[in-house]
Image (cartoon, rainbow, N blue to C red; front, side, top):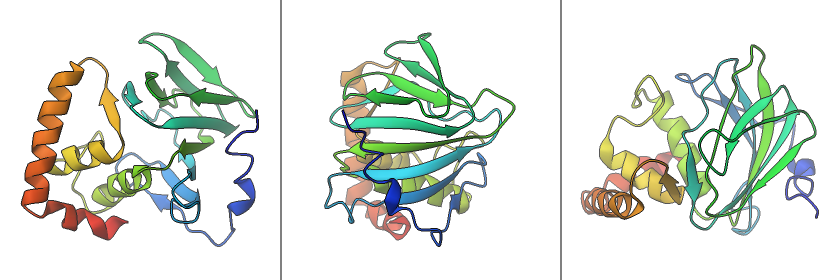
Length: 194
């Protein structure tokens, strides 16, 4: 099977500027935007500093996510809590919709990896909002949005379900908060990030 990442590596242009998260210390370079792929794919290169906690255990309802390590060691939790796999340079993991996963850099060296999301959905808006809110000082020390309405909006954009909380309860709470945020026009305050 040909990797989605393999088909997009040439899309990187050396003039592309990295977006750095001042709270978590990680950075991102968009290799293929949602717009450029016609909504089919979003691909970015991420750099995580040593000891960086990437994401909590979660899954996506409709998105296939691919991870390919370029340098360092990316620790991933796959399928269920405690099922750890460490990816080394050149290794690729495909995470289908519905599969729990998380990632982090538990090593003492930075890790660089490329991640693709297929179909792109609104994932790019989610990731750009996370970085933008951090840059604007609107996140907690762990990098999560301080405003619950912002949090609900971007969680929906990521098509994300967190582990440990009943799915039905998440849908009701996140859905209600996101609807309220839209009613209050808060989505407009996030649109500057994308």
